[in-house]
Amino acid sequence: MDQGDSLKKVPFILITGFLGSGKTTLILDLVRRYSGDLRLAIVQNEFAPGHTDGITLRRSEQPFELLEINNGSVFCACLLSDFIDRLEPFINQVNPDVILLEATGLADPVSLGQIIHSDKLTDKIYLAASWCIVDAANFHKIIDTVSRTRHQIRIADLIWINKTDRVSDTKAIRERIHEINPFAEIIETTYGATDQIDFLQSTCHPRESGDRMTTSLATPCHSRESGDRVPLIPHELHSSPRPPIGSCVVRSNRYFDPAAVKKFVVEKSPDLYRLKGYIRISLQETLAVQCVFDHIQVLSITGYDGPTELIALGPDLNNREFSKQFLALQKKN
Image 1 (tube, rainbow, N blue to C red):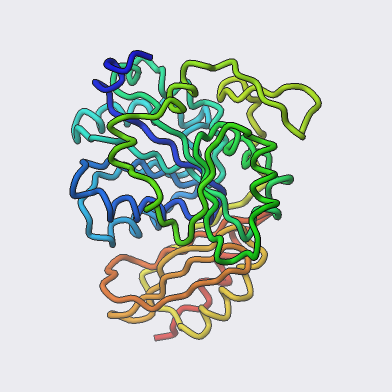
Image 2 (cartoon, one colour):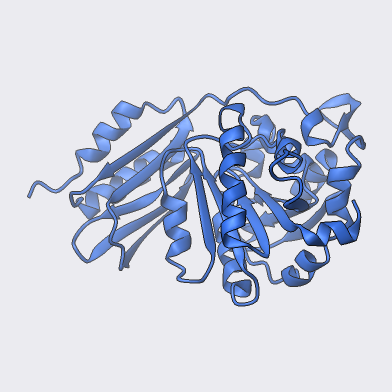
């Protein structure tokens, strides 16, 4: 790709990572650092039909533009065309300096090339970078059982090992990542901090690695998963089957019992991939819930004026039973 041509287009950065790896937290850090210098456009894709992450971003009260695409992955054939149709007018309307796509944690980004090179977008955006956020604390629980996590790593040119404060050593994580993708740069961080990179410089002057992903589409690498050489290219990867993961979104305009909610969260979270949301317990007070497996955070916040919304994602999740159990925690009066 000609450097002059690429600079006429908007840099597009893909951010992947499994559920709860810290994608939204990392984006919040970028917003905090650069919203005063760049017109940031964030495309947020959630697997479930909820808006919890969008609410989290808006609570930062920083200037940015947001497009939410929920209820599935934008890389799935069922949403791909609609996503392209919505992204084009969004770009025309907000005229961003850079676009960040926060993919759902269940994304298998095999269709990335179809987005970048679609007729409607090929003259508007170029792939400046692909980042993958890895949860150091839960990496070994999912890397060999959820194939799409390996696909996310394989197409990345920068991999953030997040939550390093929760592990004693990252050597084994680095080695496994290198087996999957020997070309990616690896940065270790905590709480999604991005101060190790000059994002302003990298978006104005994209690294060669960004071009590698869009032009060197046939570069193979050796993988432990197979004795053969495996292509790094998004459209040459075999798409993973839809995961056997259930999702549940529960909404309510009533107040909940805080003690019962905390007990419910502690009991349910270890069996789920992700549990997140905002739960109203009074007119002034809300519980913000963020859980990844057995790492549980329940914080009391003020200033939230939306309804209760709790999102759960996990293996073989029974939507009806989960909703019934949660709604039973509502206050009686």
